Amino acid sequence: MSDGADARTEGEVLELLQTLIRNRCVNDGSEASGHEARSTAALEGYFGEPGETVEPAPGRRSVVYRVPGRDPTAPRLMLMGHLDVVPVTEEGWSVDPFGAEVIDGVVWGRGAVDMLNITAAMAAAFKPYLTGKLPPPAGDLVYLAAADEESGGGLGAGWIMENRPDLIECDYVLTEVAFPHLHSPGRPPVYPVKVAEKGPAWRFIRGAGVPSHGSQPYGTDNAVVKVAEAVAAIARSGGPVEITPEWRNFVEGAGWDPARTAALLDPDLVDAEIEDMAVDDPLLARWVHACTHTTFSPNLVRGGTKVNIVADRAIVEVDVRLLPGQTEQVIEDHLRKVLGPLYEELEIWGEPARASSSPAGGPMWDAIGDAFESLTGSRRIVPALTPVGTDGRFFRAKGIEAYGVGLYDDRVAFSEFLGLFHGNDERVGVASLGLTARLLSRIIERLSDLTSRM
Image (tube, rainbow, N blue to C red; front, side, top):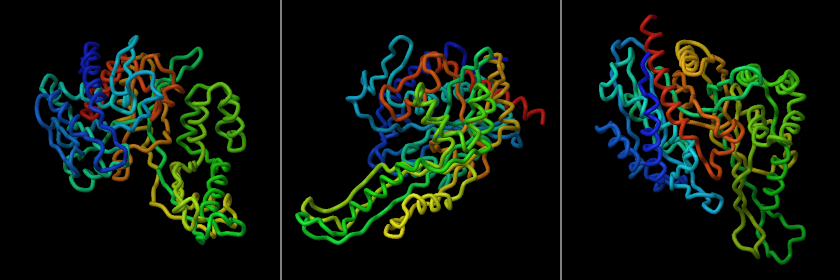
């Protein structure tokens, strides 16, 4: 079996990743931010030819390439990365967050793991097919570098799905999150494969009051106070527990000791186990909590008009995440319970949302397992759930299977990796770039081989 991206590809991926980081495609949620056109231009230079671009707003550009397969009936695979990154607080970084410095075999910068590393590795795996260095696979091979993922995809993958679905027709998608391996004492490492993600179901909670002079607060109806009480109650609640099939499959394959495994699968014991875990590994405990609870995080509060006027309006925005299989009734039931009588005094609304998942089986799953085994000697892959939302949800909503895969060196441990997303000092081992490109190349080959024989 030949590698579409051999060990020498590491330097090529690193150079592209550094360019993407330095392009500073920072998405602050406004239409005027992002500037992803900088990085689509870089990709067109890397590939040596233009792709099909879409630009719903100035500078908010995505680019798509397609290599036709040998067999029009064979499954089509898309490699999908995003180009935008979240803002940074530079004071919290020990290096320039957009310098893309390489220090002791690690590249530092915003987007190094979310997800410019994978976007670059995907480009390296795709390029030999685009240039003809490798013959076409059985089914079409598509590469999408999307804008606006960090603000919900409305100017990126979501927009393309609604307005130009012809550009991204496929049967399988590889995207984020690409987890590093889990160490399993006395056994080969475990390689998590993202098959499911929680659904963002943000809620807006508004309180109303009666304005009066702030110098005389006794007995007043203050909207800020109502909202503050709601925030405190929601933050203390922790969210309801649910052990989903996706979580069960992950824990049973993760290689933890039997006592921890049993506790993490028991709704009555999981919270205590999370507290014990947090003593030594708070980042892992935070992730486990998110994977076993419907989470409510009140993150933005606005209220009042002037310091000497009792507030007649206030609002809090709550980041709510649903687990696979849950409906929005879970949200209403929980808020009624934790807010008590206050629930009836507040106006609560939000956008409908569902979590999404793909099966841990079938040709794509087999191709992923074959690829890991060929590169690592281990086929210990486990389906994993992520609490964050990705562009993969747009495709699962259309019945298209979407997975997240990557192959990392030992520079960053699993729990440390989890804390790098949207955090300070984001970084990835340089060796991981070539490893991931090789893994993706093997997956493309194996899927082509498997489906050619179907």
